[in-house]
Length: 317
Ligand code: AMP
Ligand code: MG
Image (cartoon, rainbow, N blue to C red):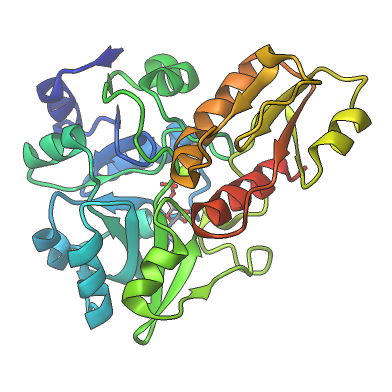
């Protein structure tokens, strides 16, 4: 059920239940971090392998000490600057954090979401929420309450309605080697924004050898239709001319293509707008049951880098 009733959602999570809730990035599947029953439910509903850890959501920076220990100075500075916001910090876990949440790691991923409903819910609780994205493992992340409901039906009794997610793409996950920042997953906070605070950051991209985050798995975020990423739209459109094509472009409309099956992410050329609409567009094109989605590769900087990362992973067979 899609609902605006925060008290009802609070009651469910207080009783070891799991709900869908909005954040500024994507919708999450949330439960009490201190309830083994709730955390197990999250993994089973999502069909997420137990070796993939969850993100802990707290209501304010002041709660960080209950989640993590030995916090590097630079991490504290980033938390002050970017929270509430789409930055997830990977830190040494507090002994009270179960290894079920961290998937056996001694590190924990944590953030303060920047969404009034998520924060209102967290403020009604005396525990933080563990919440991965509210999609079955490997599929496109949800950016509307309807996406969550369509994925899980009655398995998730309540999805709190927060409308469309403002950022529309997952948080950026950052860990530390000493005082240096390591980006485990690109997200809606750009590498450039992070580096203004941390100096040069290392981009962790050894996905095949050590998938420390499922968002780093080479195949992820995938629609049902085949996705094809290209630098040359005209060539790709003619290559697949015998197929029903769904087209995803940055700013241009393509005359040779049926407008109905075409999504332009940002006619004004804003990477932020394009990122915020990416998953909604993939959900839409997928629902049209096209044979193939052809997506234009983005300029490889700022949020274009994050968009390209998602397109690449979604296109892996
Ligand atoms: P999701 O919320 O579904 O986007 O997934 C949470 C993301 O956080 C996944 O990519 C996790 O692997 C990542 N994550 C959680 N804990 C850790 C950790 N200790 N180290 C690295 N990544 C983590
Ligand atoms: Mg996810």
